[in-house]
Structures are given as structure tokens and as C-alpha cells.
Image (tube, each protein chain N blue to C red):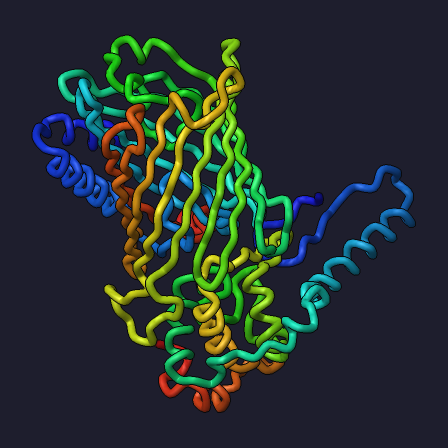
Length: 307
Length: 165
């Protein structure tokens, strides 16, 4: 799916708006090629995690597209496909496969991530912690920007793919996710730490904060596509916090952006977010799109189909 | 933490006892059976605080809320509990006496907290008014009698459109 999407995008030349349109169309096409089931109940964040886990037995398939134009570099688009499965009520596991295309350069596969999220407290509290553990096996040409850690900067995105793809980073990433729901609002805070397990690099840190709310808290009694309850809006703030050799906001990138999401009844959820760089180390604007479907009781359905 | 099952139904472990003594096996079997029965009786109800138990559904009996709840139920609940809410496989019926006799506040507590160890997810991400709408719908369905017939009278009282949308 990534290569199909990427091959469509690689012919795209022009403005950011045109590339975002292609990203969006590609995402919708990819999503519609799957049989839609129902919408997920997760907040619409791109980078921030909340304490919403996948329901046990449900499989969510998600496509995330990211596009940006680094200053003094070639514009790039990244595609990540994500398979999220609810193993238990308190445990969700997820696999990501990422690729990217850089204009005037190449289209390449970047690698995978495997993450697990666990809720240590089984009841709902004012603040709900979730523990997150991820193993990454990605080359340095990865442009998915699913999190920002360490001394990330715009200079990382101007190196040619040929050089960066030769360097594979295997790292462990841990997050402490804190999340609260209050009067329809969700507030989520993620504290991130990452360690390259191959090299003697320092521990890197990052953060993400998100707030979101559906446009209506009560559902409409009639069947409708464009009801307010099917829309959610919010904002995300995220960035790096340096590493053990130099902790802080400086010499790393920071982003802030609004999010809108639209859940098509009995169909996919579409999300869009422009993220604006807040300092000179950041990319000017990152455009993000996401299409997600949830297949309820996936393996039970598959067993039902098999002879 | 013991590994819960995915079904949302009570876990019934079939563990081999370390020794082959028949009495030990029998005791282990009995304990497992007691655990299953206790869970099936709605052990989550014991965890509901009194203030939550006493909460009242602001949408109770309102036709619009029931219709909205039916829509939400179809989106989020029907795959596990069935379109008719009678349960599927090991997923429990929501028209049992136990569920139908539970207070609105008790069901609201369960929807918010889930029963994560037994497979029932938390629906805290669904806004509270929407959860009340689901409860209004589930309660409008009424209990299923022992013989399996449904209390249609109660359904028609609350929902002009009936349970099948």
C-alpha cells in the first residue's frame, strides 16, 4: 500500500497544497479499498496518546500521511500504515510500517515499529496512566515524525536518502501517558524517552500534549452523516526535550497545531492537522492526514468466514 | 495479574493441579466453578460506589434519547452483545434480569470504567451524555423472560420505533 501510494505521490510536483491534496486522496483511496466497519472512539491526535485502548478483539487499520518542505531541502511525504489490535481490555499492541518519498531523490521503505500499551490501573480515575513500550527498527531516512525526541532539527531532513537509508537505528522507546476526560474534553500528556540500543548514544527525551473534544456530546436521534457528534476538534503541542547530555527546549524542534476529525457513520475516520514549527530548528509546517477503520472482533469474523 | 479472557465473559481456567490427587483436582474444579459463578453474577456490581449507584439517567424514557442510544449501540456495542442485545457467544446478554434490574447509575459506572480484566472495555471516551443515551436504549429493551420471549410491552412503552431500527 505504501509503495502504491508513494508511486502516485512521486509524480506530484508543486505547492504544499497540491501535495496535501494528493496525500488526502491517496489516504481515502487506500482506506476505501478496505471494507469499512465502524469508527473508533479514540481522540483525534496524531502524535499524542490518550488512555483509550483498542477494544479486545478489535483491529484498527490506519494510514497516516505526513508532508513537509524543509528549508533548503527537498519536500518529502511519508506514509505509515498501522495495525492496532486489542489483546486485552488493558493491553493494546500495534505494528507500524513506514516509507517515504523525497522529491528529486527517491522513494524508500524505512522500517517498522512495534509498540505495546498497558493500563496498570483497571478503573477510570481523574488521571489515567498508561505505560508504553516500543521497539523501533528504522533507518534514519524515516520522515513519519510520529514523535520528536532528542535534538531533532530541520537539518535532519535535508540529508539525501541514499546516505540516511544506510544507517539503521534500533531503539527502545518508553512513554508515560497520562490522560483525563472531563465534561467531554480529553487532556493527554505524554512523556517520552528513547534509547538507541546499538550505539552508545544518550537517552533522548520528548513530550506531547493534546486536548480534544467532540463537537457534540450527545448523539442525534436521526441517522446523519454530518451531525456535529461525528466531528471532533483539538490541538497538539509536541517536541523534543534534548538528551542526557543537554536537557531542555533548545536545539530541538517544537510544533503546535489544530486537529479536526470526521467520523463517517459505519465508515472510516478522517483526520487532518497542520503543525506549525515554533522555532528555527523546526520545519515550517507539517501537514498530517489520517484515515482509520476499526474491524470489530476481527479474528472471530475471520474464523466465521473460514471453512 | 491473571490473564483475562477476551470475551468479556468470566474466565474459567482449566489448570492442571500439580499432584494427581483426585481430591485436589475436585477442589480446584470447585474453586474455578465458584469463581466463574461469582463473576457471572456480576461481581462488578460490588465495586460500584454508592454515589454512582444512585445516579439517575437524565434521558430515561425519552424517545429521542432512546433512538440516539440505539444508533450508538449499533455502532459500539452490537458486535459483541448482538443487535438484539441478547449476547453473542460468551458475551453476556444485556436483557438479562441482572442488567435490566441494575440501576442506571450502576450501568453508567460500568460503561465508564469497563471491566478490563474480563474483556469489557471502558467507554470513557464516549461523552457522558452519549453513554446515558445508550443506557436509555438498553433499558428500553426490557428483560428477556426465562422462556426466551421478550418484554415487547416495555419496549413499545419507551420507544415508538421499537428496538429494531
